[in-house]
Length: 374
Image 1 (cartoon, rainbow, N blue to C red):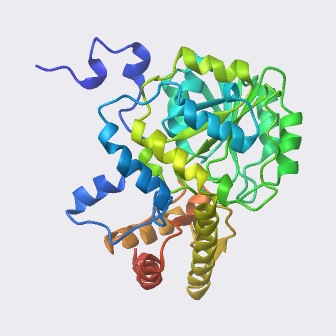
Image 2 (cartoon, rainbow, N blue to C red; image 1 turned 180 degrees about the horizontal axis):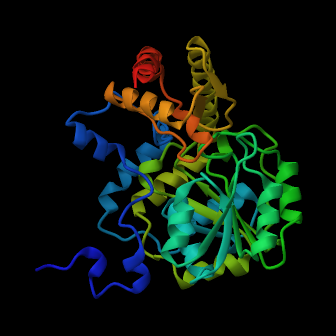
Image 3 (cartoon, rainbow, N blue to C red; image 1 turned 120 degrees about the vertical axis):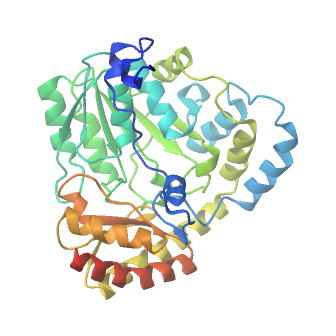
């Protein structure tokens, strides 16, 4: 008789105690279950506007080099990022998206029982990694759909946290704090506590969202990605910026050959095409306005967004919002929703091209009517 997975004697006690689940059910899994493709893929905050044509061209030309490993130092990309951000190369590490960088950071800093602080209902992959290394997660509630820097700091002081995780702009609500607010948070950090500031959506946020990069301050690490504004989610390229001593420590644990050569080359070309990024920002803003109007047309309230998605308050509780989401999915429109009360009264829809917005406009009234019947 075969062993149950959680009884496998090869697993560590910690691994055996973990659920064999992932933070997200991918749209591909949902398509397989439904035996039909989605008409609009609007749940993962991908950019349907795509990457720069220059990046596509560079990646296409580099495919013939796929027989080679990627540069384990990501030297050229780090050099370009250092110039773009006006920091040192030794203050940047490149990894397989922010998710991969979070894994390395947590591996460096968290062991059994290490306290960390985050917001209840914030981006769940951070929690996934902390749990995987045995850390103890302490959460604070959102305040009026915003992550609350003051409450995060207070909780960190209370529990002696080593890490505070916060995203700005926020996922899943799309709300944003000003640079001044984030800087006050940094200045208020407890001793020996690191702020993990996830800035995945920073290229799409209003000017004045990000405080100046200060890599001499060892109390904060900033994480960014090519997945959102640059439209390269499938390439898996992220980077972290911070004090050289912490960034250098990533070399102790990171997957040195985890970066695709094609992805590195594509990201380098994307970074050089800031005109394309500016055009994407304009398209995202237009789509946000469309989603605001769709919400209003259906008697709903859209939460103002600083990201490439809009979170829409369905006006009732989580059960009602889940019914709305289920109907949208059944109609072929892939969306997601926050998973913690009271944010789970909402659904979250990625910005996209006009044809996708037209599908949302058509599907949402039916989804609301269907939910009323549940």
